[in-house]
Image 1 (cartoon, one colour):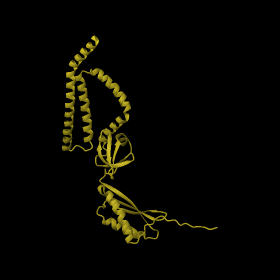
Image 2 (cartoon, helix red, strand yellow):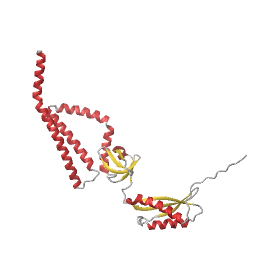
Image 3 (cartoon, helix red, strand yellow):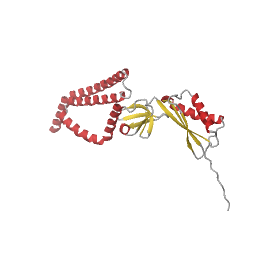
Image 4 (spheres, helix red, strand yellow):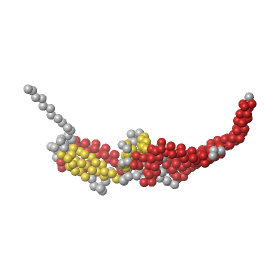
Length: 271
C-alpha cells in the first residue's frame, strides 16, 4: 500500500511538472499548423500575382510547407523537454534508414528539382513519357500529373520523367501534320495530286511557309501512296489532321478517284 501511494504521488508530481509544458506544446502545435496553412495560402496568392511560372508554384508551396512543419515539430519537442542532441543523433540514424528505404522517393524528388531547373516542359505542354501522353496539369515534388485527351489523370514519378526519353509536342509554335493517302493503280496520279493540292490551298489553317508537300511515297501492293506534309500552328494540329483526312476522302469520291483496299482472290481446285 505504501508503494502504491508512493507511485501515485510520483505520478501526480510528474503530471504537475510536465502538464503545463505539454499543454503549451499542444497549443503551439495547433496554432503553428494554422499559421503555416495561412502562410502557404498567402504565398500562393503572391506567386500568382507576380506571375511566377505555373510549373514552379506547387513545388515551392509543397516544399516550404514541409520544411515549416518539420521546424515546428522540432520546436514543440524542445518545449516538451526532449534533448535535441539525442534527438538529432536518433534523427540522423533514422534518416539514414529511411533514406535507404525511400531511395526511389528521393530520386523522384531530385527528378522534380531537375525538371524545374532544366524546364524540358511546363504546365500546359503536351508530353509523352514512360509510355504515357497527356497535357501537364501540375509538377509536384515527387510526381508530374498529366491529363489525357479522354479525361483520364496520369500520375508519373519524376525520376523516370527526368531521366528517360521525353517527347514534348507543344514546345514549338508550329508542327507538321503527316498524312498518307492511297489511290488505285488505274487512277490518274496528276489528277489525285491536284485534288489534294486544291483542298490544302483552301484550308486557311495550313501555313504557306514552310510550304506543304504532296509526294508519291510508295508503290504499295494495292495502291499508289501519297505522303502529304502540312505545316500548321500547334494548336490547330488535331483539327487539321482530322478535317483533312475526312475532306480528302470526300474530294476523291467526288472526282471518281478510288481508295483501294486489300483484296484476295481465292481459287478452288477440283481433283
